[in-house]
Image (cartoon, rainbow, N blue to C red):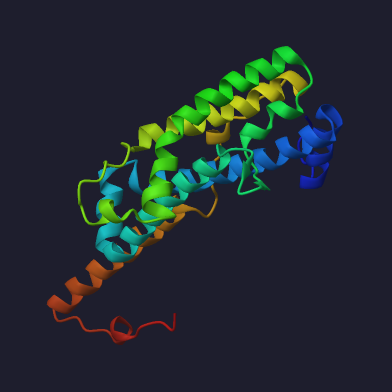
Length: 229
């Protein structure tokens, strides 16, 4: 598919090659997964790449970044759970990969996609457990450590597996209809976590230099003037 298309042009292309219902659903799921990968990428950049980055954010604003870490982690689990939820909940339709098979006409493709969805649902099971008993709802016994079954094990590796299994579903469709696939984890974010890390590092270095000047008796007016943030 040619590049430099608007979002609406891409959506129309998906509808043209897949049909109205399947194309619209695929496009919405593709956007959701791309956004999820983008958010997860920021989490990994900050908290899953180098110990030195953890040390840096803790030095800069440890309390705040603990909140960021927990929020991004729980958001990723929630998002994965939503994308692998049943087609309907409480009588209302959901945007989920599990709705795809009912819109696929070709039996071989429907079978392949259904099998990939089964894998994705299994890989995402721990996310639903966390959502149901810890994030969206707070299981009382779990909160009180009163004999509750522990939450299913969760890790960055398990999140990566779940994301990959969902991308396999969408790529099976794009490969069939458009002879192409998407590397959802292959796109960096301009102005994202790495940019912030460099600003924090520069700021901490400047603070160290300012403290050294003060210790040496080199007092400067600008060292005592806080910006209007």
